[in-house]
Image 1 (cartoon, rainbow, N blue to C red):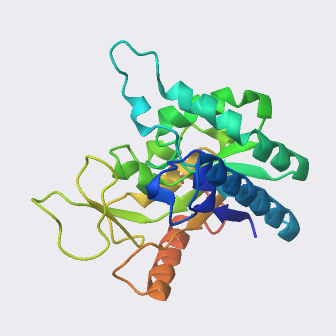
Image 2 (image 1 turned 45 degrees about the vertical axis):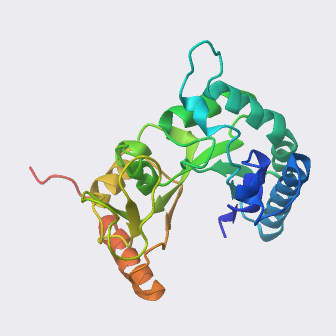
Length: 254
C-alpha cells in the first residue's frame, strides 16, 4: 500500500463549516474542526500501521472568494494559506513524527485548486521540508480550463503522485443528457470517464512524466458512471500499460 486517503472528514479542517458539511458532522466550527484534526491524525496513524509512506488529505478551504480581490480590501488567497498552517500544525507535526508524507490534491473545493495556489502554499511550507507534496489529477485541472499536460510538468520532487482518469466537457446548450455530469464552477458541465473515453491526451501526459523523470505513483482512478467498474478499470489499466515502456528504449536507429 502506498497511500491512505481521507477526502471527506478532513475537509472540516478549513471548511466550509455551515450546513454544507452537516452531513459529515453537525456542530459549531470548533466541533467540526476538532473532528477533522482527529480524522487526519487517525489517517496518519493508519498509514503508519500499514506501512504506507503517505496520506492524501482534502482539507477544504476557508474562503473560496479570496481568489478575487475586492476594492479597498487587502484580503487575498495568501490569507487562506495562513489559515492552513495555523490549523494544520498539529497534523503536520504528527506526520513528521511518524515519517508519513502529506499529499494535497488540487481541486476546486480545496485550498490548492490550481497551479498558482499550489505553488503559493508549497512556497510557504519550506520550513516543513518535503513533508507536504502534491497528488495531481490532470482531469481536475482540465475541468476548470487548465492544460492537463502542463498540470504534471515542472513540479520536480513536489509531486509525489498522479491520478489517471479521462474527461468529457459539454459544449452544447442547456443541461447535458446522461449520467455523471457535474459543474466545477462557471465553466460548462464536465464528467469523468475511463481512460480512452474522454478528450485528454494521456499519451502526452505519460510522455511528460517520463521526460521529467517522475518516479512517484500513477494511480488509476475510476469515476466513470457509464461503464461497469471492472470494465472501466480493465480498459484503463490496458491504456496505461500501453503507454509505459516495458523495457529499455533503444533510441533512434540513425
